[in-house]
Length: 133
Image 1 (tube, one colour):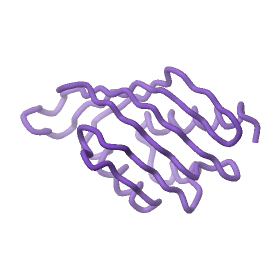
Image 2 (cartoon, one colour; image 1 turned 180 degrees about the vertical axis):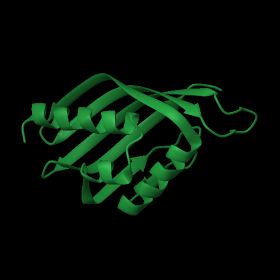
Image 3 (cartoon, helix red, strand yellow; image 1 turned 135 degrees about the vertical axis):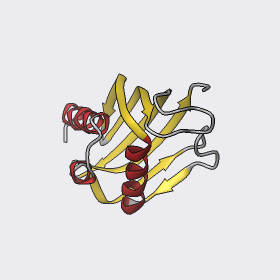
Image 4 (cartoon, one colour; image 1 turned 90 degrees about the horizontal axis):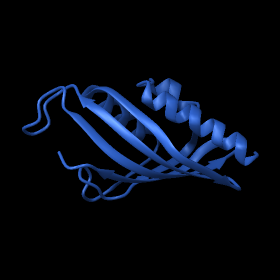
């Protein structure tokens, strides 16, 4: 695929995430053998490595913990089968988190690297930097 096509797919993927898409909506972006790595951050101090079913579990937890979220792409580039993006994320808590009540807004800055195979996300690495609460 052309880099511009991969950028279009990535933008559609990010838009689906922002809209709180269902697993079925997101499945169309993932290769069956996807591996998602989330490097250590405030919420996952040890990081996380997820296969397809673990991604679905994490998405379900995220949807239940948040009443809304947005993911805005700040920069995006593609080369070969790879897309790199910088994004700004905000999420509004639907449930308490520690001493923070529902309605609290969380913010983060993400760098994500997507590797595509046959037009689907095959590998995803995410470096998430959360703002202090």
